[in-house]
Image 1 (cartoon, rainbow over the protein chains, first blue to last red):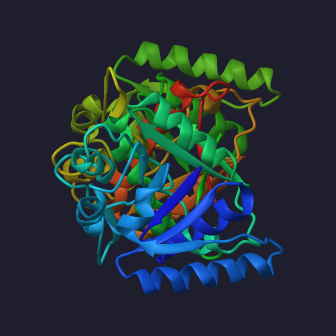
Image 2: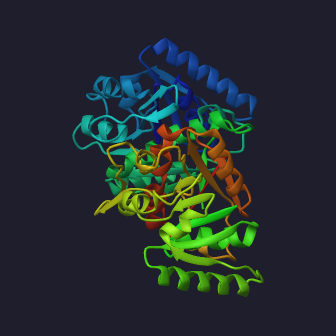
Image 3: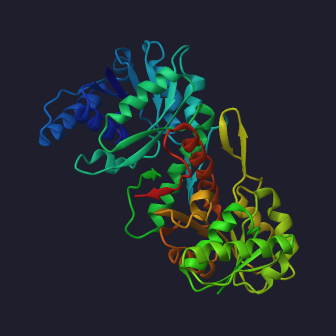
Length: 221
Length: 221
């Protein structure tokens, strides 16, 4: 498959790009609003992979071009850029699965709080704005970007996956399962996305408040 | 200390009662609206503990009597009984820490959803209804009751703890740390309780949707 990381120059996009490129045979395309920035990030990721003994191409392109040829399009952008990013690629996306890892949060003096949009979750916001017949899958919400992008880091983390479209959910579940140290878990349909997303501010609060814990993910058992 | 489990005849109360009695020197009192039910549960727990080689008394009493002598009062009741239970013991509770493990949830055809009260979380609802000068600590929200009550079960679970009162938070943190296989984690103040509570419906959904996973807790790392 071809995997496009829109906003793939950001931290969560970097980690997914590097690990997909290292752990699978899928082609990776880094997307950005700025094609030059995308190309620079792609070169940098390829160099990082080469440092880890992985000889593979990573392409960079403007978001619409990255989305055009992709089988899986990951919306690796902050929640407040989500709908703009979907709008920018809506005419180019073809027969792909859209993946939403973003979480709406707000910080105040008490720490980080879950701050979902009116439709209930960012994943559902992606679904509400997706082009017709393009299924949306929520995944990769609860991964600390820094550790994800550190290819030497041992993860052993769970990835709750939510979707209403079973085939699309299966595609993303298989993709997650191919990544070393990540276990996909079926967390239900899109209506269950809020509970997945709200785990992220909890991880951030726990990391902030407890010595020795940082860059946290989670394991269910 | 003396630890009262109000609603301690229920499943989460049973697990906490058994493990506190087994793993600490604290005295355990099982509370119930019906004192006879409390006494029966206490005898049953003492018998279970004896089966596991632990020779200790467990007392049973009506909720107000159980609360009266306690240093830590755990509101081990369903969310919809929370305020009634606090009201029933408000005049009896003395210089204690109130602990709220309850989570508001609703189930529909999509699975389990977090369903907090208007104040933001059940833990904050407990704080809003607690007697003056009685601090409230949120803890024990994310523990599968069945596994908690099975004394042979190996847990290795994390327990996020939220409170605004540092001394009360310290008391509950120490109590959790004394229980085998449970690690207390500081998850912030009462304003951060919703993110802790909403993990529970996620655990239930993951257990429902994935073969081989049941009675789940969580480990942050």
